[in-house]
Image (cartoon, rainbow, N blue to C red):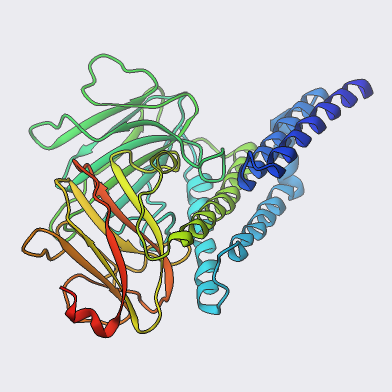
Length: 423
């Protein structure tokens, strides 16, 4: 056994050194290095257990009984606080308070997703991102739903289409605390055959089967189903009422096992740490083009769970008390477009009570079809005012959805007193 351990240790040390060199010489980002090191540790631990004649199930039982699983969950949550002091993070009390509330929201969403509703044998569509759990520039026009799934099973998604303006479905691999890039896509569907009575059903599986008009693909390693419902007018449109059921066996939850809880606590805590660090890095990078709206890299967006039919213009904004940001664009033919304001942590500002976004339906247009959006701390008494809700900086996002072209929004900072003269 000592010889085997020596060989294993040497191999692991070599792999660790290779990763460290990759980090030092810039071939891997710090986050990717951390994720790869954690994955290497996990693989090495499983191999060592097998060599010692122990099983993952037995190890999980021990971790639960001794409290180690809970202690590591708490330690990872504590470590997630590093995002609050990441490069570019605002250090004033107001923004830090929003930041730590953001972590608490992620913890709440993570526990529901990976502990409470984590049984892929009996999945439920849930709203992990909503009015009080926000991340990654969550869209105020969206009604998000997600469910835990597995490529080992087959599912039926069914219900009524409703009248919501845009509906898309996706299957994804992992979550923000795993892998190198967040949520790699494994299937996408946004065009459906709908019955005359407004109902529809979609098969979710790795292989398409005869008799199904609607099929949402997934891969063996798929772990999440994501539903996006996008409104033009929330006051008049009805959401699609959807349910998900397993069809290759009984749709019935099983009693929780020590291994499931151990894995769920790990996933919940790494979700908090992974998502917060990913978007902290994005927010810092956006500051290199503050008060501009360049096109966000499409591949990066798709790998992080973005809709492939959307072009995103992510950036950072910062305004003095006497300044305003003017955004101008001529919308192309498109299914939808919108603009939103976020805080530094990439949480949308509170769209329930404040006008922090506009879209294709809400916006007032000029005679030539162009639109002017005004971001300001006070109401300038002009069309398309977006309030900062007491913030002086943060992130922002412009989207074109299913557009036949993608014009670049033009931005400029002006004095608040000069806004009325801007036409």
